[in-house]
Length: 149
Image 1: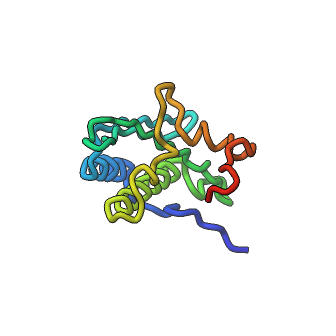
Image 2: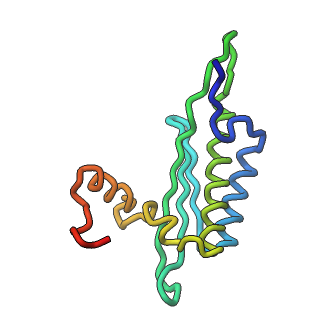
Protein backbone atom coordinates (compact mmCIF):
# COMPACT_ATOMS: atom_id res chain seq x y z
CA UNK A 1 0.00 0.00 0.00
CA UNK A 2 1.48 3.35 -1.01
CA UNK A 3 1.35 6.53 1.02
CA UNK A 4 -0.74 9.30 -0.49
CA UNK A 5 1.37 12.43 -0.68
CA UNK A 6 -0.26 15.80 -0.24
CA UNK A 7 0.90 18.81 -2.29
CA UNK A 8 4.05 20.52 -0.98
CA UNK A 9 4.42 17.89 1.76
CA UNK A 10 8.17 17.65 1.21
CA UNK A 11 8.88 21.36 0.81
CA UNK A 12 12.00 22.70 2.45
CA UNK A 13 11.10 26.34 1.76
CA UNK A 14 11.05 28.35 4.97
CA UNK A 15 7.77 29.91 6.10
CA UNK A 16 9.38 33.36 5.98
CA UNK A 17 10.30 32.90 2.31
CA UNK A 18 6.74 31.87 1.37
CA UNK A 19 5.36 34.76 3.42
CA UNK A 20 7.65 37.18 1.58
CA UNK A 21 6.57 35.70 -1.76
CA UNK A 22 2.92 36.33 -0.81
CA UNK A 23 3.66 39.92 0.20
CA UNK A 24 5.70 40.71 -2.90
CA UNK A 25 3.23 39.03 -5.25
CA UNK A 26 0.26 40.94 -3.88
CA UNK A 27 2.15 44.24 -3.93
CA UNK A 28 3.30 43.70 -7.52
CA UNK A 29 -0.25 42.78 -8.60
CA UNK A 30 -1.70 46.00 -7.18
CA UNK A 31 -2.89 45.22 -3.66
CA UNK A 32 -3.00 48.26 -1.39
CA UNK A 33 -2.09 46.50 1.85
CA UNK A 34 -1.81 43.14 3.54
CA UNK A 35 -2.41 41.72 7.01
CA UNK A 36 -1.13 38.30 8.03
CA UNK A 37 -2.35 36.43 11.09
CA UNK A 38 -0.65 33.18 11.97
CA UNK A 39 -1.99 31.28 14.99
CA UNK A 40 -0.64 28.05 16.43
CA UNK A 41 -3.42 26.78 18.68
CA UNK A 42 -5.46 25.98 16.72
CA UNK A 43 -3.15 26.25 13.70
CA UNK A 44 -4.48 28.73 11.16
CA UNK A 45 -3.09 31.11 8.58
CA UNK A 46 -5.17 34.15 7.69
CA UNK A 47 -4.24 36.59 4.94
CA UNK A 48 -6.28 39.72 4.34
CA UNK A 49 -5.44 42.15 1.58
CA UNK A 50 -6.96 45.34 0.23
CA UNK A 51 -7.75 45.43 -3.46
CA UNK A 52 -8.76 48.45 -5.56
CA UNK A 53 -12.02 48.08 -7.51
CA UNK A 54 -14.35 50.24 -9.55
CA UNK A 55 -13.93 52.01 -12.86
CA UNK A 56 -11.43 54.47 -11.40
CA UNK A 57 -10.02 51.98 -8.86
CA UNK A 58 -11.42 54.34 -6.25
CA UNK A 59 -13.13 51.67 -4.16
CA UNK A 60 -11.36 49.15 -1.94
CA UNK A 61 -12.51 45.64 -1.07
CA UNK A 62 -11.03 43.43 1.61
CA UNK A 63 -10.18 39.88 0.59
CA UNK A 64 -9.64 37.09 3.13
CA UNK A 65 -7.86 33.82 2.45
CA UNK A 66 -7.54 31.24 5.18
CA UNK A 67 -5.60 27.99 5.42
CA UNK A 68 -5.49 25.39 8.16
CA UNK A 69 -2.32 23.29 8.13
CA UNK A 70 -2.94 19.57 8.01
CA UNK A 71 -2.33 17.70 11.28
CA UNK A 72 1.15 16.25 11.85
CA UNK A 73 1.65 12.52 11.28
CA UNK A 74 3.36 10.18 13.72
CA UNK A 75 6.05 7.90 12.33
CA UNK A 76 6.36 4.17 12.90
CA UNK A 77 8.94 4.51 15.70
CA UNK A 78 7.44 7.29 17.77
CA UNK A 79 8.97 10.20 15.85
CA UNK A 80 7.29 12.39 13.31
CA UNK A 81 6.62 11.25 9.79
CA UNK A 82 5.40 14.80 9.05
CA UNK A 83 5.99 17.36 11.82
CA UNK A 84 3.89 20.34 12.82
CA UNK A 85 6.58 22.64 11.42
CA UNK A 86 6.54 20.79 8.10
CA UNK A 87 2.76 21.14 7.91
CA UNK A 88 3.12 24.89 8.48
CA UNK A 89 5.71 25.15 5.66
CA UNK A 90 3.38 23.09 3.46
CA UNK A 91 0.37 25.36 4.09
CA UNK A 92 2.39 28.49 3.37
CA UNK A 93 3.74 27.02 0.11
CA UNK A 94 0.21 26.15 -0.97
CA UNK A 95 -0.98 29.71 -0.24
CA UNK A 96 2.01 31.27 -2.01
CA UNK A 97 1.53 29.17 -5.16
CA UNK A 98 -2.26 29.59 -5.14
CA UNK A 99 -1.97 33.37 -4.98
CA UNK A 100 0.77 33.46 -7.61
CA UNK A 101 -1.24 31.31 -9.99
CA UNK A 102 -4.54 33.13 -9.49
CA UNK A 103 -3.00 36.60 -9.76
CA UNK A 104 -1.23 35.55 -12.97
CA UNK A 105 -4.48 34.13 -14.39
CA UNK A 106 -6.18 37.47 -13.70
CA UNK A 107 -3.25 39.47 -15.15
CA UNK A 108 -3.24 37.30 -18.28
CA UNK A 109 -6.97 37.78 -18.73
CA UNK A 110 -8.05 34.16 -18.25
CA UNK A 111 -10.33 35.36 -15.47
CA UNK A 112 -11.12 38.73 -13.98
CA UNK A 113 -9.89 39.44 -10.46
CA UNK A 114 -13.50 39.50 -9.24
CA UNK A 115 -14.10 36.02 -10.63
CA UNK A 116 -10.96 34.64 -9.00
CA UNK A 117 -11.50 36.11 -5.54
CA UNK A 118 -15.25 36.79 -5.34
CA UNK A 119 -15.94 34.10 -2.72
CA UNK A 120 -13.23 35.59 -0.48
CA UNK A 121 -14.39 39.23 -0.47
CA UNK A 122 -15.45 40.26 3.04
CA UNK A 123 -18.46 42.33 3.98
CA UNK A 124 -18.46 44.94 6.75
CA UNK A 125 -19.13 42.19 9.32
CA UNK A 126 -16.10 40.13 8.30
CA UNK A 127 -18.13 37.44 6.49
CA UNK A 128 -16.99 36.42 3.04
CA UNK A 129 -19.36 36.22 0.11
CA UNK A 130 -18.65 32.49 0.00
CA UNK A 131 -19.63 32.05 3.65
CA UNK A 132 -22.97 33.68 2.91
CA UNK A 133 -23.78 32.26 -0.53
CA UNK A 134 -22.40 28.69 -0.49
CA UNK A 135 -24.73 27.44 2.29
CA UNK A 136 -27.67 28.88 0.34
CA UNK A 137 -26.53 27.06 -2.80
CA UNK A 138 -26.15 23.80 -0.88
CA UNK A 139 -29.65 24.19 0.56
CA UNK A 140 -31.11 24.86 -2.89
CA UNK A 141 -32.25 28.36 -1.94
CA UNK A 142 -30.11 30.23 -4.45
CA UNK A 143 -30.91 29.04 -7.95
CA UNK A 144 -31.12 30.83 -11.27
CA UNK A 145 -34.66 31.36 -12.54
CA UNK A 146 -35.75 28.90 -15.22
CA UNK A 147 -34.89 30.12 -18.68
CA UNK A 148 -31.70 31.92 -17.58
CA UNK A 149 -28.51 30.17 -18.48
